[in-house]
Image (tube, rainbow, N blue to C red):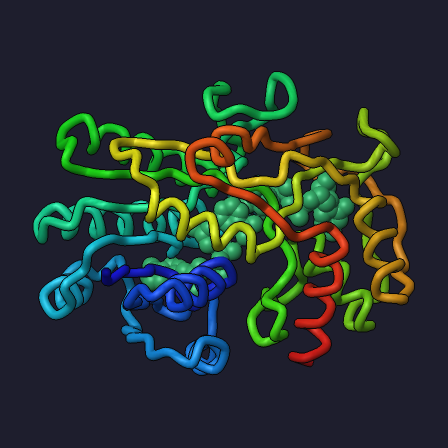
Amino acid sequence: MKVLVTGGLGFIGSHTVVDLLNEGYEVVIVDNLVNSKEDVLSKIKKITNKDVTFYKIDLCLKEDLRKIFEKEKIDSVIHFAGLKAVGESVEKPLMYYENNLISTINLLELMQEYGVYKIVFSSSATVYGNPKSLPIYEDFPLSTTNPYGTTKLMIENILTDLYKSDNKFDITILRYFNPIGAHKSGLLGEDPNGIPNNLMPYIVRVATSKLPVLNVFGNDYNTVDGTGVRDYIHVCDLSYGHVLALKNKKTGLKIYNLGTGKGTSVLELVKRFESVNHVKINYQITKRREGDIDSCYASNEKAVRELGFNPKYTLDDMCLDSYNFIKNNN
Ligand code: NAD
Ligand code: UFG
């Protein structure tokens, strides 16, 4: 079984490639390295002791991508490739629409042309906008507040229309909540360029003294301690969800939330991080970040029931592993 993994050198993709190799799948990675580094490949090989094929290709260049479909006998696709920074998408919407949509349309056209019908797509909890209640179920109304989120929702719509037109397609849409943590080996993890937008990458920079202080965006939300609540999930639990999606016997168009179902506030996360890693995180309360919501956490019941999804890592594991990765890579 040969799986094409687009964006397979990125944060979630690289962890998923490790799982796929460990499960005996053959893996072909396509990534243009716009947000990843080629040395991830040797780290994947070191962890798994298995071979993986890599092509440095931009999915927006359809004829380049076609060569992979010609050369490799692909059985299924996991599509991670995409740009994902919310703030950047507001500043450069055309770049986001072009990259995320053209790449996906090229991929889907080639899949149809070459008779590859099984795809797992990386969507996001961002498509729920400001949820009407909690926890969030898959059938909640969808809306977005930024171009990045809109690309995810547009791709979900494209996949839905494609399935209606050609029900040979077997499509799984996975809506991720907040992936953090890193591989236990300390070899794979997330270390964004520049000043991080997301909470955990920011916390680890403060822990390693790369940044002086964490800005906590508001403490007047309607939550346990006034700070924003999110559903943090260990990247290794999230990555294994993709293996389960490939193995799922149910065909057709399926949508699953991948989260733990537990909400954690910013300050709760900071406290756990300090406690398990024995390090002090300087923080200050600042004003709310535009577009943020009070709370966001999943119902993962459908994924548990239909995929056998069973997140096993704790918040402590997430804090330990995120810090371990950064200490190993600085
Ligand atoms: P990432 O940036 O680490 O990985 C994405 C990979 O795609 C990178 O290696 C990048 O180089 C590659 N890529 C981007 N555009 C490409 C193109 N045109 N051609 C080829 N390769 C391209 O991001 P991640 O955190 O691993 O996220 C993976 C997917 O999950 C993304 O689609 C993202 O939007 C989605 N997602 C992420 C989160 C999160 O918090 N990390 C949450 C919800 C959804
Ligand atoms: N936060 C801070 N300070 C920071 C960064 C974040 O207080 O420096 C707070 C935010 O206000 C929020 C929480 O920490 O309450 C989490 O923020 P993140 O930026 O880490 O995550 P978001 O939930 O805002 O968004 C992330 C991704 C989105 C994705 C969403 C759901 O950035 O792309 O998770 O998957 F859509």
